[in-house]
Each structure stands twice: as structure tokens, then as C-alpha cells.
Amino acid sequence: MRKTLLLFLLPSGLFALPPKDTLPFIKATQLITWRNGTSDTVYVLNFWATWCAPCVAELPHFEKLNAQYAQKPVRVVLVSTDFRRDVERRLLPFLERNTLKSEVVFLDEKTPNDWIDAIAPQWSGAIPATLVFRPKVKFEYFFERQVRYEELERVVQEALNH
View (spheres, rainbow, N blue to C red):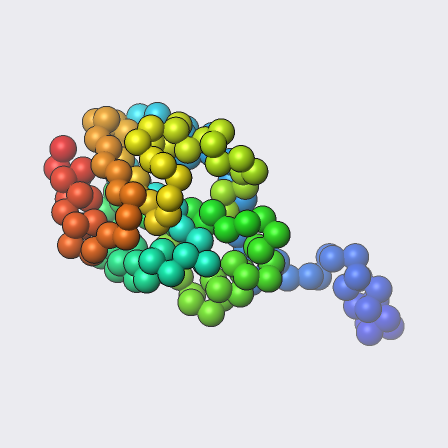
């Protein structure tokens, strides 16, 4: 009887485990809300994609920063700009293989031109790109290129001390 009940319930999803790598899909408005808020947290938003070699090369810097500032008000968010059609077959397997500890979100937007200027007016749309900001004190710094760990840490320290 138990086996029958279990087999009956499994397809319904009652006992299904959540996906191992749940990936939040967010809209640009969420990023803009963080940027325009009043939080005293330093946000480090890295815009990247799995197909971008310089993006993937700099991911260890963000992982190191995330670990080093875990006890500080610093939030590292890796914002995937992969194509939506590649989430299942490319992005999720990449995340599983690389076991990133930083927060990862998928930017669920179709037209970059609709939101790029709102993130950083000077941004051409090229990746990698990183926006560091602390809303409470209106601190912002933008990189539109691959960053070295030392310069990333310097900007985070500046934001914390601002």
C-alpha cells in the first residue's frame, strides 16, 4: 500500500524536492530599486554571461570578495545576462559545475536597451560590467571591463568608508 501511495504522490509533486540549483529570475526594476533605495549595504552587481570568457575569468574575484566580506554589509550579486533559451542547458549546468557561493540571479529582460541606461548611463551594454553602490550615501562606481581583485576591493572599501 505504501509503495502505491508513494508512486501516486510523486507525479503530483507533493514529495518532489526543489531543484538543486534554484535560480531567481528578476527584472531590471529590482536592481534599480536596490540602487535607488536607502539601504546602508554596499551592493556589488556583476553583469556577466557564461559565453563571455572575461566574465568567467573574473568570477573568482567576486567569490573571494563575497567570502572576505561575509561579515560586513556587502552583498555580491552575480547578474546573469545569458539568453533565456540558455538557462536550462547552459547556465544551470555552469552553476552546478562551478558551485558559486555568491548570490546568482538571472536578469529576465528581453530588450537590454530598455534598462541599461537606468543601471548606469555611461554603460554601452558590454560585459563584463560591475556596478558598486551604497544607496544610503549615494556612492557609485562603475566598471565596464574585466576587473582585478585589488581594484574591486579598493572600491568596496571606499564605499564602506564613504
